[in-house]
Amino acid sequence: MTETLFPLGIVETVSLFKVLLAITALLALIMIPALISSNKPLQVGQAAYYYLMKAFGLSLIGLSLFTILLHLLTGSLFPIEPHFGVLLTFAVGALIVLTFHKLAMMLDPAASLVIKTIFLFGFQTLGFIMMTFSGLCIGVHLLRYRYVIDWEVPVSILIIGILTTLVFSQLTTAAVASKHTFIATILKPKRKK
Image (tube, one colour):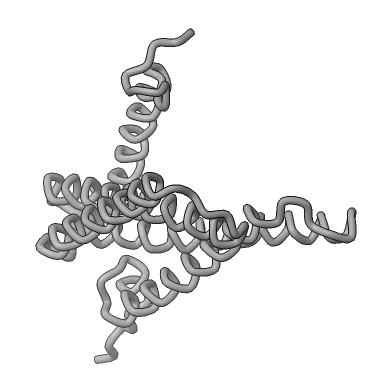
């Protein structure tokens, strides 16, 4: 049996170190293009950290929404203790997102330009992939079996994917309109003299 750091064997020690290594690599990969376009490495690092923490908070929110949707679709009621856990997960995720959003807004827009663009388009892409794969899962089951076995999970993922895609496409459109993303900077029309 593997050694765990947390009770109930939720997270194995080796898995935790793999996740931390992957997060560090992701942070480095995100910072490379931002460092090329900016001469403020400390603020670029702060922006990458803030947006990575916002992504973590959104993951907690998504996890709690998935649990809520799954139980609503199956019609199963679970005891009050799991409700508290799901609500606590949602609240902690929302607090993390709000805290790091406020911190990210205090940074110089030029330093967080590329990071914000990667964040917005990354979540829009993630939502589209979730929506596509869950829709394909439902479609293949309908074509193959004429009904969907265990339809609650793909439908829950489909709903979350649709919401993620719609919300982040609106945020991306608003960011491009406000000229606070890398794409808006590229698409900015040149003035004729």
